[in-house]
Length: 447
Ligand code: F0G
Picture 1: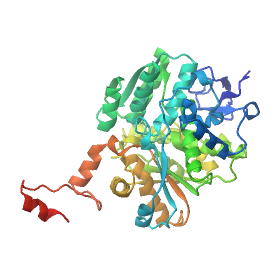
Picture 2 (picture 1 turned 90 degrees about the vertical axis):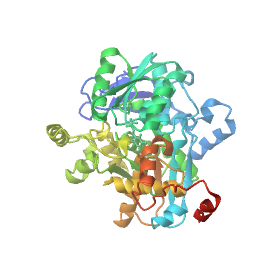
Picture 3 (picture 1 turned 90 degrees about the horizontal axis):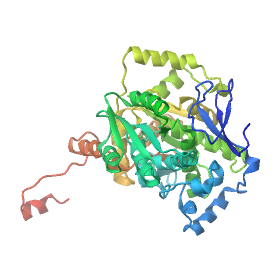
Picture 4 (picture 1 turned 180 degrees about the horizontal axis):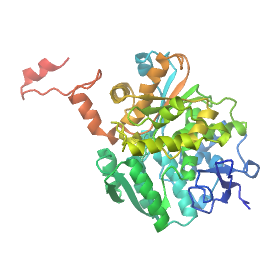
């Protein structure tokens, strides 16, 4: 029987098995479904209102108050402070951007960009890694692994060595942006390139971790998703504890969308918020499993009784066709998202919508964000590309408040950026001009 305030529980209502947080299992040992971290809130001193968390800003010499994740620690209360690791994650900002709002036809003050590129490893992953590595410390892990389209491996490599855990990362050959590959190598991860795509790596890493007893750091790990909830807390904190009408997020392995749904579900249950924002999840057209299953196959959460046959049939089709996803947004080039079911729950909780956007629109949106905003990598720009469609279709109104989660830094994938500009691929292309080493000729070029 579970005695701690936090425990793990299988999301499948037919199973519902519970486990304490001292175990590292990552999938229900009874039925193989996903696990959730649940809390007995009566045993936790949760602040009476969200704004109480802001008091921690005054104690920023305390490493846990400084962390943009652990600042909210009562809401992810699964380990003692002595196990909590931090490299200063979560110092990210919400930028209200009227330039981009104007360009896409929204009213002033409505469009916000949550820039997660400011994290130590340059992506939102650090929010999850600080939580998962704290759990790894709690269970005494000495070696860990992950599969990755790049950012997970960068974040794992950074945290692993800063907390003294060995790590191996699996990436698909030729499928990873250079900025991310350079980080994994530089941070000292053993980097294994599998001749295959992310889905192949994801399958292999689970078997490797089981066989060798390695600690798994993909978003299958429910502790990671606890850390990612704080991205939502910081958005509402930056909006003076008001809730936006919409959260827009790219969909890859569907960890973020799942964790955002859980964050709002819990805040509502705790009486800390009185409204849940709507969630828009944006797939790339070349990796649109969620869009297809939700919109074409009507796949639903259905109180946890998900129709597995719809998913199994679709995956069998992909296998038969030897389908491999393709998009320039390599971070979300995933066709078998491991958090699919939790994401269906988030869609249910947040009255969510799913769409997909083609690569040419993603790179245009990326350049638009680069020109007027903080810059981001292609997967992150899927948010603004998707938002344009949702505005055009009247799903989102021009005067609603929207927060787009920019998941990764612009420098993660310089190749896509340079090619877009140099090859004049879109309406914001801004190629460099070459000129002779001659003053007059140079001056004649300045506009
Ligand atoms: N944006 C970026 C920049 C990412 O790196 C990822 C995922 C996503 C969005 C999708 O997030 O999985 O929560 O839906 N990257 C993983 C990786 C898969 O291995 O780095 P999700």
